[in-house]
Length: 76
Image 1 (tube, rainbow, N blue to C red):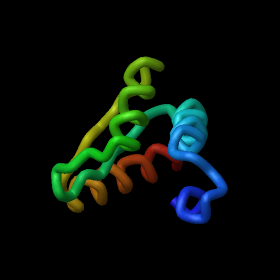
Image 2: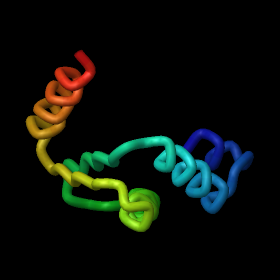
Image 3: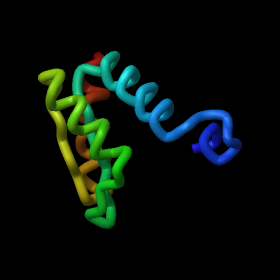
């Protein structure tokens, strides 16, 4: 967002970078508190799906906390 607002990066370039970041992940968790998925989030979710990565969309902060604690336990 900072790069876009500064005019350094275009939306297309930012989404390319976002998808490259998704490529390094095992799964994608999208936190959508107001049940609105932006164009960028949609692009990232679609990329993850096409890459065969699991995608979890959550709308509640409690769900985010539960998932975070679960993942932390897996690290141990």
